[in-house]
Image (cartoon, rainbow, N blue to C red; front, top):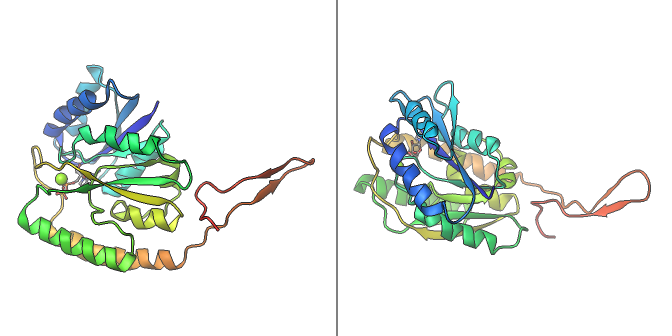
Length: 256
Ligand SMILES: Nc1nc2c(ncn2[C@@H]2O[C@H](COP(=O)(O)OP(=O)(O)O)[C@@H](O)[C@H]2O)c(=O)[nH]1
Ligand SMILES: [Mg+2]
């Protein structure tokens, strides 16, 4: 299998079938993949809808949290259970366009395995309310300046990365919005790719403007602290019994 597509959802029942149809249309002839829906305590019948599609033979897996633990937790659950070495994440409300995945996949395939690569979507034309766009603009520019992660838009749900890279990153609530800084900290490289953005399908946003802003400030200081405390040794050698000596590099070590 080439790719695991991880979709965190809370109360997105009406958006599941259209998104799955779009993913199939974009990827069926292109690569082998699975779709992991991570349902995070939905109360609107999202899980039932995923089960219905599963019964119809869609290439789906359903993972459910016992109660709502947040978007980052859902992404991590999906990545942990994924079967492919590469992960794509997508929002479950239809704002990301699955037709962008082949482009990201081609870029990933054309890149060397080291240093590991995070491809992150950059929403060129945001299809959100004016307030959300302004709040996001301010948050993105403060974050970029303080973290120096060179990424204009970290909030896009569409990303592609190696599973092993993600699992090596420090985990905390809302960490999915700091992936570029965390990947750079781990010695990886980050490339932003312009992608399509669309209005939300059905339902309402799960985030207010200000709840994310306040917690985002705390997270920002947390990530700055992590950046200052980073230390990744380059593994030069591993000697075992006998004379076999292996010289290799840690998969995500910084070049000296
Ligand atoms: N698993 C999980 N997913 C969430 C949660 N909050 C939001 N999401 C999902 O994350 C994606 C982005 O959320 P959304 O409400 O569209 O945020 P917005 O696009 O910034 O308004 C959607 O797929 C949501 O279903 C949550 O608490 N848990
Ligand atoms: Mg959305």
